[in-house]
Length: 169
Image (cartoon, rainbow, N blue to C red; front, side, top):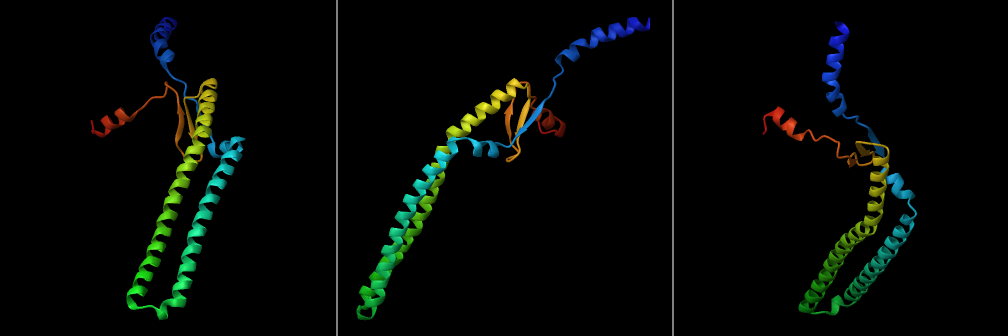
């Protein structure tokens, strides 16, 4: 009798075990992997060249301002009030233009870095996805960012259940 009940329970519970998921988590240090990719050297060189050109441009602007300021300092005692005011406004305008240019070039450098790194990041993400699928992983976390970098279709989003539990739905 006991064996019969056990058999009936096992047959009844078998579908539950068949649908149960095995959760396999993985983690990666994406920054370490990225830095070891051979393409990084090319990206670093391109960024260095880009930044070097920008620095040269900024240095030329600074030199121009310094030269104009030195000339102003030499001649200011012989200038009329109106000319001195015009010269000072020109120098302030040049200084403002230098700061604006510096900020614009910083933004452009960040944009260039993102643009150059995108293909490497895409390649890394494809490799993470491939390895994750081969190893049957449900989710992979990046140790550096703490973000999920891969999740399988088998991963369960519990957001709706938590909202319901909190009475937010």
